[in-house]
Amino acid sequence: MTARPDAADGKGTSGCAVVDARGETPPPPVEQSLPPVEQVRPGLWSIPVPWPRSPLRYTLAYLLESRGGVGLIDTGWPTEEGMAALTSGIAQAGYDLADVRHVLVTHAHADHLGMAGQVRAVSGARVGMHPAETATLATVGRTTEWRARLGGWLRSRGAPDGEAAELLDLMAGAAERHALLARPDVDIEDGDLPFGAGTAIRAVWTPGHTPGHLCFYDAERNVLLTGDHVLPRITPHIGLPDAAHGDPLGDFQASLRALTEYDPAEVLPAHEYRFTDLGARVEVLLRHHRTRLAEIEHVIACYPGLSTWAVAERLTWSRGWAATHGPMRHAAVSETWAHLVYLRERGRAVDYGRGIDRWRPGPRCSAAD
Image 1 (cartoon, one colour):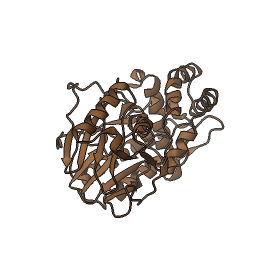
Image 2 (cartoon, one colour; image 1 turned 180 degrees about the vertical axis):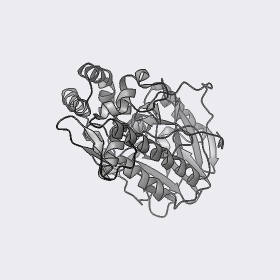
Image 3 (cartoon, helix red, strand yellow; image 1 turned 90 degrees about the vertical axis):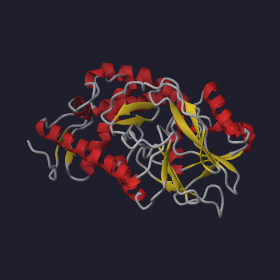
Image 4 (cartoon, one colour; image 1 turned 135 degrees about the horizontal axis):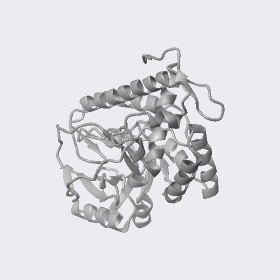
């Protein structure tokens, strides 16, 4: 699975769903087979774990040897097929599932954290994750509480009643599955050496895609494992869903810029394929969001008073707004909301609604009428 220098930007992930940079579901790739298990560097293996019904097809788990024992970074979507693939990949690296001592989780989405609990049950491995990510798991409560919270969020964003009810029904299964994901044994903070003192793997906190997203820099092998933070062809979903707060797009941009202090020989993402020239890819991602912000500013300048939902309806989606459905539409609105919050925090947009968002240009808005 070598680097592809001709790869284009334009698509992104939304938790356990896939959307392009404008919120749309990309078509299934032509090639449906999984890539092989590969030895990326001595003592470092890439293991593709299938992700059913996802255009991304698989999550790349990584097995690493260190003085602190054998570790995994991410585990993949939880299915019997996925566990078989993970177990087989570990065996191809010369180990057994019971040999795993550490599971480092980039973030708490099911295609990354999914099988950490199963690995721990077999091997006794300690599962580690950033505490901000652990906190997001605590927001998934009983179904009735979740429905009330998401329903209120949808109403505040301006969702029509019928579509809000449909989204609640469609997304209930994902919430129930998320509530079953493993909780970590240890916290991993920015700068920690999760394999132990004197080892080469260092955690790098990169909030944005999620509040507690972690990358891992391997100084000995000079590679950066980026989870969903930096991918070679698609952009991660940056949204602000129910129960969330803050400025995730601002966090994401700051995290991207912070990564440029590293100059790895190769970047190892959780999806697609390995690539080089981290700095160039970071600039593409930053440019994408600058373009998107300019488009949103133009919409609210032309149509002041729109809700977040109505702004999303007027943005450029690759297949058109009408072609987004269910979780994809929720992801699109969530991403639009995150961009509007970013603009609001910088004086470029103002929300004057009471209960339902109403957006107009702020004093620093750069869009023309």
